[in-house]
Each structure stands twice: as structure tokens, then as C-alpha cells.
Image (tube, rainbow, N blue to C red):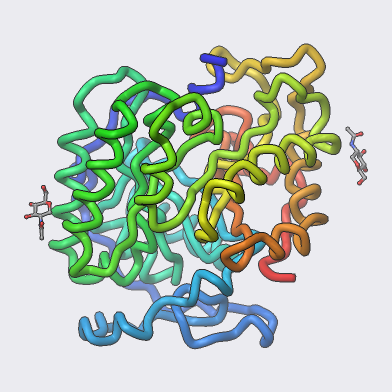
Length: 345
Ligand SMILES: *[C@@H]1O[C@H](CO)[C@@H](O)[C@H](O)[C@H]1NC(C)=O
Ligand SMILES: *[C@@H]1O[C@H](CO)[C@@H](O)[C@H](O)[C@H]1NC(C)=O
């Protein structure tokens, strides 16, 4: 099972100040979406943030109701390459306009990312990254991220949730009671900004630990790693729905009705050192990467029926540049397969 872990390349993590040049403001993009998806809440498709930062009082009516959010939400997106502001804006607008994404899940937040999210109209799931080494680097990242959420006046308007991750339980970074205390601390720290807090984790991470119910109870939403390729029952993606349901049902049983997301979610097109199956029948190829997302799209109504307003799912990840084999784009920037999942059903 240890192979399960290494989903994110363990490259040097850049501090908030690492990419310091500022984005210049682009004209509004013409969002071209179906009128039934238009709405006056952030980050509904068709809603464009105003040019100037709203007053704090606008937060009360700013966000879309999570209970209305289901189906395809957006992408995980890795920023360790220190993308230029222009590239961030270009790719965030691609997520918004081409794929009709509403959110981007990031391992980091910087002023450039806040600007690019604002310009493109994307909400952010921001992660305090724990890495894989079981060291204390995450503590500095936590403090930097919390401080940035307070310091940038727009951060609270684009940050939908703060996540502890990835897989701090599965990776044995912190005992479950200490992680629960961290979640409580972050919730108190961010309460004045209205930013909820969660943990980004596999079902197995909770299942194998006594005391994890107290952690689930502390979370504002449940942000699930759904990676059926690593199941001991895995074969082809078309046959993975029972594996998905197995984990999902566990979270339904233990989640007390909370909103749930599949936030690290996908099927790899290749194996690599850190991406090895636990079933001899598991197939990693582009067909199966594609089939997995088609499967989720075909089960849109089933996922919508889940407690809390239905499952919203992210595709992991935007580009093979960010994690080999998981990209929707290959490393040359071409789409690996057609990708047009529904954003509601
Ligand atoms: C939140 O945490 C940051 C980083 O530790 C700290 O600088 C800030 O003062 C805290 N704010 C509140 C309101 O607790
Ligand atoms: C998965 O099912 C789809 C039809 O929904 C089919 O086109 C595709 O070839 C199947 N994939 C595999 C690997 O059998």
C-alpha cells in the first residue's frame, strides 16, 4: 500500500514569496456558458468577479451554496514549477472557459495565484502541503499560508477551503488527535475570514486509525482522495464503480451528512516509480484514464444524490508536466483525450 502515496512529485516547494512578479490585469474573458448555469454567486459559471475588491460585507452573499455544487468542479494544479503570472492566467482561463471548471485545487497560494483566480473567476481549494518525508516543513507552510489568507484582501473571496494534505494520516505525518487539534486551530484562525478547513485524505487513512471519527467530526467538508487504480480489486477503469462506491459509502456512513468532494481523483495513464498498482490486473493507459472520467460523468445523477448536495469532483491533474501520467494535457500541451464532463445534472 505504501506505493499509494507518491502522487505528487516531491520537488522543491517554493515559498509564498518565491514568485514575486505581479500579474497585469487582463480584460474580462467572454465566458460562453449555458444560460441555465448562470448565477450570481462565486464561482458559478457565468459569474465574473468585479474589477475592484468588494467590501468585506459582500462575503455574506458571495459564495455559491455548496449544497448546489456537484459534478465536475475543476482541476488539481501544481505550482511548483513557479509558473509565470501570464501562464497562470492563461491556464486558469483555459480551466474556466474551455472545461467550465469552477475551482482549482492548489498546493500553495501566492498573490499571483490570487490574481489569476480572480481574473479567471475560479475558486481555490488551498492546501498546506505536508510532503512525503514526515518532517516539520509543513509548519512553516501552514503559518505562511494562514498569514497570506489574512494579508491579501482578495484571498478570502477566492479561497473556498483550506486543506491539510496530502494524506497526512496515510503518510503518518501526525497522530490523528494532533491533526484534529491543527484543524481546530486553523478553523479558529480563519473564522473571521469565513474560510472552512478540511483534510485531503484517503478513506484508508481514516479507516486504519482509531480516533479518526473525532477528526471527521471536526472537518467542515470531507475532501476525499478517490484513486481506485490503487485498489487491490482494480482492473480497468470501466469496472471501478464498485471500488468508488465502497470508499464513498464509508464516508457517507461516517460523515454525518457533510458536503463531500472527490478532490484528488483520477486514474493514471502510465505507471512510474511512485505510481504502482496493488492489483496485477490494474491497467494504466490513456484509454483507462479517459474511461474513469467518463464513468464519473455517467454516474452524475448517482453522485448528485449523495448527502450534502452531491459529490463535486476534481480531475487530478491539469497537465502531465505537473504529475506524470495524470494530466489531461500531455507534456507537449496536447489534450490526451476529449474531456467535457458535465458540471451539473
Ligand atoms: C493566524 O495564523 C497566522 C500564522 O501563524 C498568524 O500570523 C496570525 O496572527 C493568526 N491570526 C489569527 C486571527 O489567529
Ligand atoms: C469502457 O467502456 C466504453 C463504453 O462506455 C468503451 O468505449 C471503452 O472501450 C471501454 N474501455 C475498455 C478499456 O474496455
